[in-house]
Structure formats: C-alpha cells, structure tokens
Image 1 (cartoon, rainbow, N blue to C red):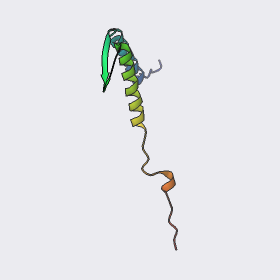
Image 2 (cartoon, rainbow, N blue to C red):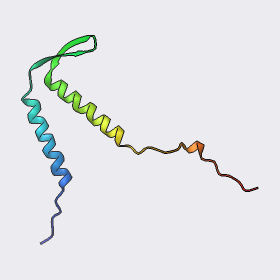
Image 3 (cartoon, rainbow, N blue to C red):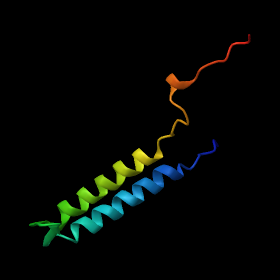
Length: 80
C-alpha cells in the first residue's frame, strides 16, 4: 500500500473557505456604514467580501521581500 501524504495547507484553506461561506450566508442584513463624512448602506455580505479582499491584498503586499539597497546604487570600488 502506498503512503498518502496529508495536504495540511489544502485542508486548512478549504476549512477557512467553508467557514467564510457560512459566516457570509448568515449575515445578509443591510448595514449603515460611515467613513469620515460619507454615509451609505450596503449588504453585510458585500462588506465582508470587501473586507476579506482588502485583508488578502494587504497580506500579500506585506509578505513580499524588501530589498535593502536599490540595484542602481551598488558600486564597486577600484584599487588604485
């Protein structure tokens, strides 16, 4: 019998997606939102999906490695 490798990342992501769908489907009310001087109403589903998208985008942006020095600044010194 061949060993089966458990894909923990797939299980974790699938569980989070199912949990998110359940939460979204239970929150269908219309809510009022105020940002600074603007006030508007939207479905809580749209608000949750938008918040998830902003959080994912911020997480992906902050995850990128940073360069310590720009490539154009690196200069080699010559002897003499």
